[in-house]
Image (cartoon, rainbow, N blue to C red; front, side, top):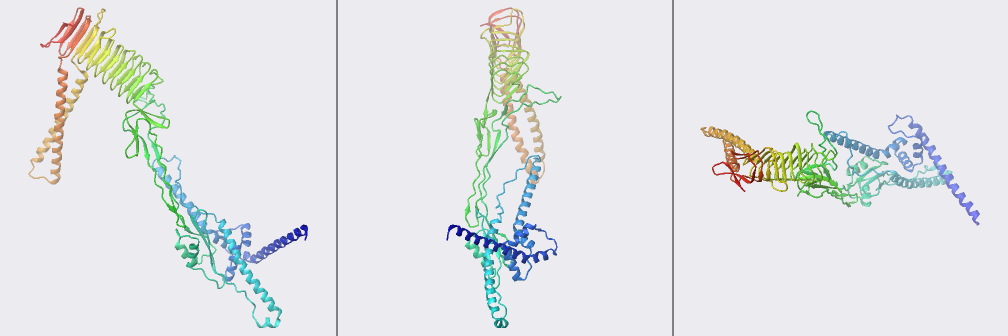
Length: 639
């Protein structure tokens, strides 16, 4: 046969097959047409199919098998019932999933409202449940199985039809026998579908036909065992399918437990990474624009970040019994920089020292030294710092510099306020313009001091001091450089040394020695505290006497008495300690033996007071020394 003839032959065969399939579809449509007409007389159902869905059911193999089964069982098949039957279980699961999701969203919203974050965007927590699989692949699998069953039924029907035709060919035999009925015995079948991942399994049971083996528990168990499904099986559902004959309906028969990854650790920062300009109003509503708050102070041990540790993952198991390892959460990257430390329990990042905190290169850093590369003006503003401050330029009038440590200024200080917990050093000197002040917990060193108020717990060292009001617990040394001390009121706890005191212009200079302002203030505060302690002890002693004078005490009152006695003992020890400290301070204040004034030249008028005695200088004196004699008088000697 030539190639051309072969092509025409095979095309003819394909055309015949196509025409045969079309004829079968039309025949099925004609057979189901009365069913559709009967269906219209029924009440409207919740599930309504469009024309396309009804047409698909007419040619669907599962529907054809369903129709055959209804025919054998004497039931009326319907499109709507069948579609709902096939679809309802998955629809119920999907509806349940939607409701649970809405419930979780409501819970998250309520939680945010309780925390006061109603406006915050709510991020839904991750859902690790097994998703509902698509039924389309399973439907194709079921269609294939239904097609095989239908072919068996049709084969038996054709066999019976041929035998019936043979019987009809013999009229005598046909009259004596009953019509031949096809014997169709098909066992019930169970079909399973496992989506990729083996996390769940769907089941659909086909009923038995004729005298076939009915559906039993063992039928489903054998199918599950053959598919190696051993975990998460819904035994109640197995019982329901068998006993209630839930055929042609898709169920989720087994469900695995997914592995739940541990929650990643996180960092909760309590310090902003970047500081922004903020201005605060006082009680009158005025704003000090010099308080720029450019640097944020932090104290040793202050919290920077909370470190939330990662959680361990929870293992899961698929329906075949394979353990699914839950991934542990990832540890967070802690932004620990210089002079920050993680607490021993690993839960917090804190400052290792006092200073100011900054965020650089993705890390928090704490520095106890603040360097200002320039002048302190409106671009820098006032500074209040836990640590040392280094100023490379000048400090202009009206600004305030505070530091718990040292303050080092390379330039000039005008009418500003400088407060240091330790030392103050001014490279170019200070002209306070009668408004500038210095407060030092230790010493002050400056090229010169003019028209300023100075409060120092330690010593002062300068090359000149003009028209200043000074309170110094230690010694004042103006013997370097020009060494001029002119005008003002100078109070020192120990000594004053200068090259020149006073001036030819007869500018009055007053010197007071032996009076220690800071020490005296400390002594006065302790005396007030001691007086309060004495009063408290007296009240406690009265209560003790009252309770002890009673003939008998209840257990409660006896306990109160013991507590009062314990408190009185504690206050007694505090009183003794304060009295000893006050005695030491009094000795420091009243010890004038080491007090003196030394100068190469002193111009009148000058008044030198040591303790309660004074010396008025009315003539210029050279190389002199003033001190307190054993008789308690201020005398002048030659140095």
